[in-house]
Image (cartoon, rainbow, N blue to C red; front, side, top):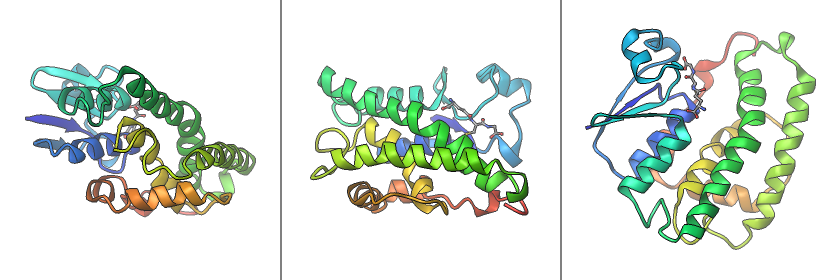
Length: 214
Ligand SMILES: N[C@@H](CCC(=O)N[C@@H](CS)C(=O)NCC(=O)O)C(=O)O
């Protein structure tokens, strides 16, 4: 059975679990990382020498890096669905997943999310947070324009593009930050929020992760 290592509050684990749930794959998730520890054990290091979650074991095949895992699951279990069959559609879906990981994630998660949730306000670099909030808002405004009249990021069904982009939107739309007007992106997020798999695995409350003073 497919095994997924990682705590459910990790955004990179959430991306994988959303994929697993959309594909209805039989699986076992093992809590690891954060308060659950385990990453320092020799058993875990044998799976991922960089000691990060998520990691999957599919039979004797081991894989880490959340985006690689999503691509593997889509290609293996949903060729023509989450992984579009047409190479150009697949490449375009990949482009958006990469864009979300490379352009949005560094500002939204390490800088904005971790600063607001894991750093007391008195110790926070407010300038860095504000600059990141502005950059993310501007990038999402471009996506918002492109989403006019579209149900999904690429094509007419859910693909790896939606997993990559959508997995960051719960935190973006629920954090206490300034956001520009994003009617199309907000409507897209609200449609994702109607999917049981998204609600269960991505819309994971993060208040318990908040440190005192944050
Ligand atoms: N690029 C990696 C990042 C992995 C990563 O940073 N994982 C974090 C959680 S999101 C981690 O292992 N943190 C240590 C911990 O949770 O204890 C991926 O996308 O999988």
